[in-house]
Length: 192
Image (cartoon, rainbow, N blue to C red; front, side, top):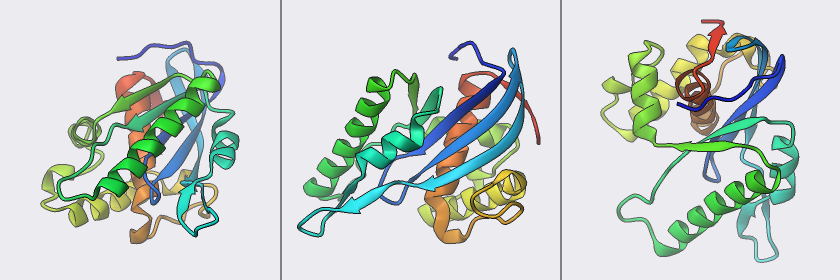
């Protein structure tokens, strides 16, 4: 478990790596290790098209998005079987670019495996990933979990409006960040 001093007003984040991933920014008001969740911003992974039309990570937008963040939890992902060499390389490049930006900005970060955050949130009674039998089930469970527990805190999707099923990358970013806050940093957050 990480320990870090938490300022009275702090912004922590979760990142789901991938072009369809996202960034979740948690705005908290804290006293020691006890916090109140103020709001959550969700952002799709910033991308742009290069000259050849290939989609790449927009490093300038990414740097701007995370400049005010004090700590980040990132999903530690690995290539899946039958993925092409080119897509695996691009995925690894993206992971390294994110890590590089965080390092340059002097923002502490931690990588956690999908198994760790899913198991942690299931055991905490927030999500039901143990019932997911396929990747599609996981995506649906992630979106349902976010809509059930966090919709009222989402500011840039419309307060009270949940995520669409197609926004599973944003849901994963939020849940990765949430596990980083309660599971890795050990903060007690009044919300749920």
